[in-house]
Amino acid sequence: MTTIIDVCKLANVSKATVSRVLSGNRKVKEDTRDVVMRAVEQLNYRPNQLAQTLATKVSNTVGVITNGLTDSQLGQMLRQLDAVLWGQGRSFILANGVEGSASLADKLAFLAARHCDAILLLGKNYDQRWFDELDAGNLPPLLTMNLALEDVDGVQFDQALTAELACNYLYSHGHSQIAVLLESGSGGEQVLQGYRRALENRSLPFNKQLVAQHTDSTTALSMLINRYIPFTAVLVPDDHQAIEVIRTLAQYNIQVPQEVSVISLMTGIEGERYTPAITGFEVPEEKMLQSLLRLLDDAIKGGGQGGTDVAREFMGRLVIRQSVRSME
Image (cartoon, rainbow, N blue to C red; front, side, top):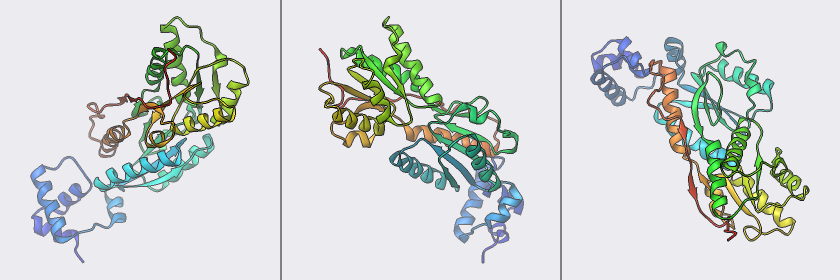
């Protein structure tokens, strides 16, 4: 069986140098790194992961906690994450779904006990209050995606600006009575902020009767309809909820887009394949994930740069399909 000593002899370097290269340490010259990696490949050397973790304090394992994602969103994100991490020589441990502060604390502790080098918080519907009592000092570095937390780095899809742009698009098509379905947590707060800003820019009054917040989009829409406040368009968080809204409207004999238009803040394949195809904003998830993993790499290797050149704010691209019609 090939050992690290065999790699040292072939590369003509010390054992410490081979260890630094395999742990991803940046304080190694590129030509030295290349020589070592060629030796590793030639000898088909596979380091003992447990021994390497004990020696370097780096497990090359990342914890991932997801929340508020549909099956389609979860599957796509995990495929992208696996591909990029595998290319970095890393793997991940998944903890899917958080029910409250105790659940979050348990899952963070579980991942920390597995010696994860860092923990990624992905998805939506986290509550800021869940993090208030966490003892972050006993946890690996935390990074977020679409979750704004104080003192925690991450990448964000600007939901406030996207909601404002969505309203502007609807206004340009003659819609002035726009209803909005909100999710819980910081995401819903951002959407409401953008919604209200769009109203203010057009000197339109804010009507709280056109805003509904519930964990179930069908229930939220039924709440709106039963208020008997007329609306011609509905702004929803994603394709999954847009489809539920269209189906619920049909139960009330309200057709989309003939009578009510629907626009999604996060659209993708699910919305493209539905009939009517859903107009919305295409989120650059792959680019966001790449930026997040650059921050991850920096957090694990401790380069001291703090990812200053990494993009953290992202905008979606409006994709015009069939679920919005002009009132003019």
